[in-house]
Image 1: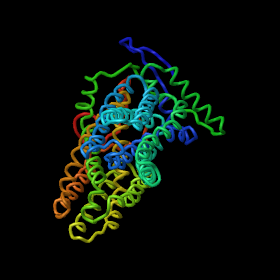
Image 2: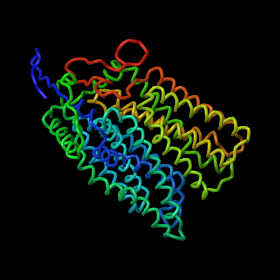
Image 3: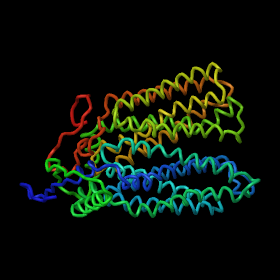
Image 4: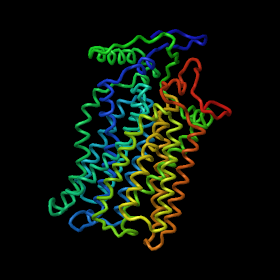
Length: 500
């Protein structure tokens, strides 16, 4: 690292930190990142599944005696908390760093979710659910930022996609636990649901200690005026790797990045970057996040209604159909994730979005013709979301790597909040209305075709506006706002005014 001043008297730092991080081999350090930070999505999946499972139990007179409206409000208030948490903590993580926030947000979730198990009334439970949502929403911003900035460019795509897919691992844990905890023959009816809210905090407590050993992002330190700490952090990472017997080649001096360190980014700068300078990337991020959220929430929040209304599956048996559905969602990102780093982002996004759209359209035709049973329809969902899950995870990857480092957390929070509001509110309500009383398959068939069309459009937008980011350092994809001189920025094949 070296520091000089330019003609205007501004400090110019020349640093090899990004290049040194990207040339690292895969080591135990990176596994620590995955385990320590990736638990966020497990916890979110667990929370959503637990709440959806305990809804009927909480209506019992021996528990909180809630109404169906109260149960629905529990889910909505949690989603609202996620939106607020993402926006609030997204801003802060770009200002004060990734590590402070991913410690704080996990602690907020642990306390709120655990206390929710002690709830004595609806209002107390709703407050706890909102605060737990704050923590998880903040996790999305800080964690995606930290993972992308700490994982070498060669592995960034597969890691980000696989970690985002672990949401379904959490959902499976929640579903499995509910089978035992909500069985009144095994656990008292007023204790089982309370224990369920403690599962997440137990997992989180086992992880929060590990997070203390995860360093602050050297990239964040470098761009915010903490050059010595950035260099020291990378020095320590490299020393630990070499102590394990791995050889690290020196990084050529020409790979250095020149920056003007800055403390924060104003809202005016953010608006200019996202609406003017990188408007096509903002359009790409918006399209990918909203289209995948619409499909996911439309199917996920109504699959039990489809099984019961059209196939006569009892409410006590829908969980058996959920497990294969969740397995498809979990395995898809793990199997297909590496291809986003080898075949490429744009090809794989179009492929996963497009294949899920085509398969959904085929299932719609067969559903309308009465050719499917509960089992075969679930098989279709498994295959559809094997591809759609990888595509949905790639939406989070895309948003987190195509904007400047200084506003990465905020970019994630904005598009996450938008997708959650659209997918979490509009899609389930629309598809619930289309299902109706289950006497007419026509409306839901149309809904499936609409969902397929939306996914296909999302894939096509990614093809034409996407960024070939595979194998490239974050600074080669997008110049940091603090860059002293513009570098070559990865572009799409679409030509137009301004950087893409």
